[in-house]
Length: 124
Image (cartoon, rainbow, N blue to C red; front, side):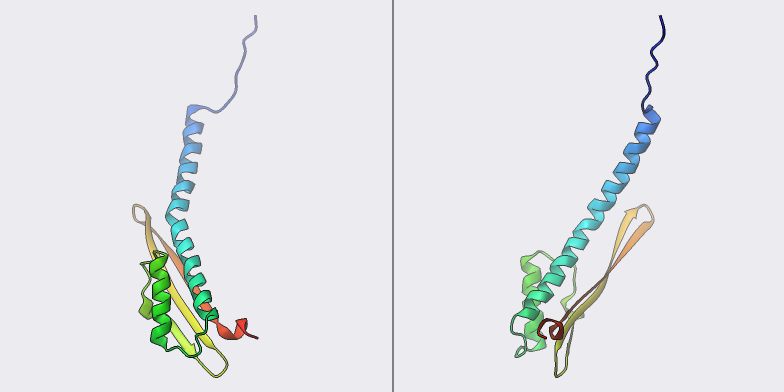
C-alpha cells in the first residue's frame, strides 16, 4: 500500500499568518476611530456652514460647532484652534490638527487631518 501524503499549512506558517492578520486588525482598530471622528468634524463644518452663518459672530459659530462635537462625542479637538476667516465673498472655517498614537512599544503613528468649509464653493 502506498502512503498518502497530505499537504497544507504547518503550525509555524499558520502562526505566521495569524500574527500578520492580528497586526492589521490591531492597526485598523486603533486608527479607524480617529478617521471616523475626522469625518464627523468635516460633517459639522458642512452643516454649520450650510446653515445661515453670515450674520453670526465667530463665537456663535464656534459654539454651534462645539455643540455638534458634544452630541457626536468628539472630545479630543480644541475648539479654540478652529480658524474662521471672513472676506466680502465668503466665510471659511478650517481646522488642521494631528493625532499621535502609540502603536507598539516605542512605535508611534502620527495622523494629520485638515478640514475646511468655504461658503464660496457651496453658494456659487
